[in-house]
Image (tube, rainbow, N blue to C red; front, side, top):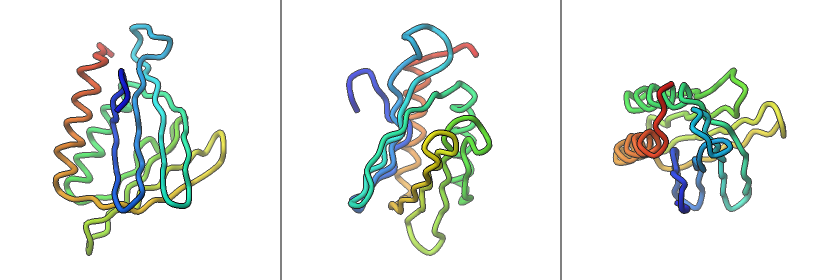
Length: 139
């Protein structure tokens, strides 16, 4: 993680990764909007996509984590103004397909397969808590 940034989402392994890095508040102010970027890195595709993150997005990510932890696939921010993130679990393997869809700017969709082991969930909840602690909001 870079100085002043927190990786809210970090799915990686087998030479591929999907990361949502929170960079700080929009304009450096005290408002609830955070600035972040999705980073996708595979042996075939590499890219970055800027995004805004609202307090409601963080609450919905908590719900998405709970669903994933219960063994259900998730669609985070689907139908919203921001890039959409889908995670489909492979029930026969400790892997998942992560799909990032930019429906408004580049009109690009990327799907990456990465391992998803039980230990990932503790780290994911810790990352969410760290974002809330680093950029508290009353919204």
